[in-house]
Image (tube, rainbow, N blue to C red):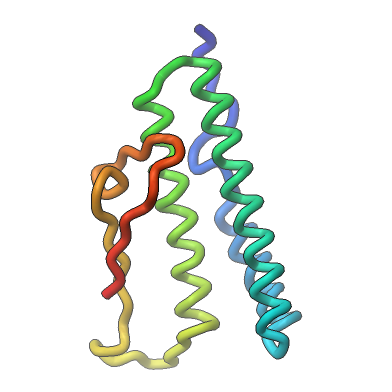
Length: 126
């Protein structure tokens, strides 16, 4: 089997996505429904592209564990980008107290760093 890594996990440029989300915020923050629709379209495309990249890699090397780890790595970065966006723009606190901080905790297979294609993501928000 071909062992070439076609597109390395996390399968997208996190910094570029952060910039795109910030740009959407700046451009559409006064039009919440428009902003949400554009963000959802963008985020769905990132997920679709990542799943396609993971599938191509799986077909190329047949390594299911590497695929599961890659999808978990993708989710780590993807959720991190969404978290960063949320605390920077949606629930912004300039100087948050200890009671105003947010944590995201992964549970289940994703929490173990393995995510099968099509799996749900179990998260706990504190």
